[in-house]
Structure formats: structure tokens, C-alpha cells
Length: 168
Image (cartoon, rainbow, N blue to C red):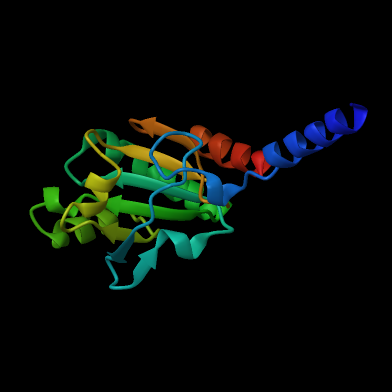
């Protein structure tokens, strides 16, 4: 009887400890695997989220005509300059009049982080973006650790990014 209980307990512990990042379901909630996507940058480079596995990534959805986005961008630039994060700054380009507006916006605010162009709205639809700005913080395993509707301050960006490091 003791052997059966011991064997049952051993099987139980082996089962609960075998969950890995590969077993996490893809979704948009905290704790879900972030959906993978590939977009071109304003400079013509192609970036894919899964290529940055092993790195913490900030995904931010925005548009040039959005006042809270404009407010958030200087803080995002400071965060980019001082902490060197991977930022996927996704412009909801299908909502813009043209890509020249995006270029002008970047120059006007002296923004240097890469901007990805969601020309067809596919990634915005994949992430079910309804209001912008919207930000996701993705850990090195590709798991969503934080999401925010609305503009983030520099301090909030730093705090959420640092907290991901502690959870890895």
C-alpha cells in the first residue's frame, strides 16, 4: 500500500512539473503565449516577433492622429534610449492617410526606435486592437506579462519591463 501511494505521489509531481512555455495556449491575456506576427518596418526591414524569443519585447500599437499616442512617444523614446529594450512599435497604418505622415511624425518627435507598419490591419485584428495606444509586455519565453490600454509613462514602462526580468 505504501508503494502504491509513493508511486502515485511521484507520478503526480512529475505531471505538474512538466508544464513548459510550449504548453501555454496562444491568446491575448496575461499568461498566454503572444500571437506571432511579421511586419515590415518604416525602413523596409522585416521583423517577426518569434525571432526575438529569449528577449523581452514591448509591443505598442499607435497612430499619428492619436493624442495619447503623441503624449506617450517621448517617454517611449527615453525608455528606448536608456534601457535598450526590443520595441515593436506597431503603427496601425490602415488607419493613416499615408506612410509619409508616419515618417513626418517620427521626425517631428525625434523618435529613433523601429516602427512596424500594419498596412492591412492584420496584426491589429490579430491582437483585437480597439483603442490605442495599447501596449503588451512579452517575456523572454513569449508569454504576455502585462498589457495596458492607454498611454504609459516612462516610469510605468521601466517598472513593467523590470518586473518581467524578475519573473524569468
